[in-house]
Length: 494
Image (cartoon, rainbow, N blue to C red; front, side, top):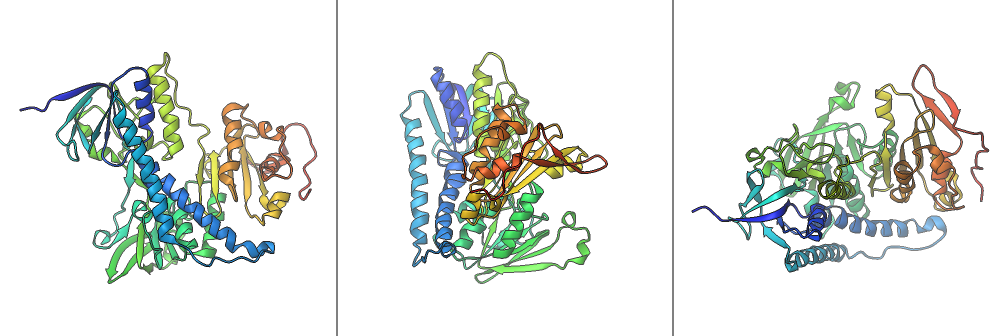
């Protein structure tokens, strides 16, 4: 006997940013089905940005205390209740997820289906496990917002050793003695900082030449240099084998050819620790959804193909967030959710605008960026101009004993292409550049002609936009003063 199928106006798979679209549907009087296999709130709330940044702030506090002697203040850390810190953060996260769950359950227009689902046709899903296993739901409009999960690279023997993913690492109640991290991206950089601050020896094995390879090369090089001073860093190495002996896990790695001019000049390495964290990227959950029963197509990596409005290749099915793969960032998923609401319920569809999508890494130092990377422009043989200004050349930066820089990338005529920041509060300082690229004229003058508080840290952004830029590309490089001549700020004005 065939299972009855519940009918809805709107169905969303995943309870992260997809819930924003579900709420918009409810506000328009629609009946809504939400399918979720885990805690409500998605990756960001439960196993991503929220718990990690809460934990990282504790690391920031400890680092501040440890640096107090630089400012003539005698202070020391006499103890850390690490387990209590982790428990408190995870309890906060669980409470937030429970609040979302209770809100959905209390709503007469939401119906929650708990468990993992598979598509049985274009707009019908069946729950295949969990509390609601066997239930079917169908809707006029479907949104796939099912996210990603940690990717496990093809390392020989990895399945036979005890390893952690980022989700597991965020719940550890004791810092490892020696943490070996496979991967060199955002998650690797943040968790190396966190566990290193609380006493772990840290080794990092990353395939690319620098850590944070998706950032601007100068930012990546600066972070890699700082991490080399704190940790055992092996960039340009690919993990190829894993083995375990008692409590010890060993990762064997060999030079990764794309990272080196001459890979044969570098010997293989082996790193042993008591804990291994695999932080080698994310893979989309599309392979769990039986998309073959639908007209939804994916790319070679499994990310769902959409048009510029976030419509998939199947009528009535939309997608957003990490499973689309444009940017694996929560604020991007929120941005896409607003676009789906606009395009689904508005009169005229509008393409999603990704031109000023920022990122931030809460490492030490912080790294943030928006827009074009210099290496991309260089590889495309584009003409462009850059200017870099250092934190320590501002009054506030000096007072903070800060190191770092703001780097601006622009067209030779002054059109703003991007900005990259390494240093304290980078995640906040990048925002005025995002606003300028989004809401302003999109030129360096949006920043240059705005008054900046003296002597606030934002002056490092102001100074990066003022004065001479260095022009690159073509047959030569030269210095170029954008716009009208103006006196350059005094580097050490107080």
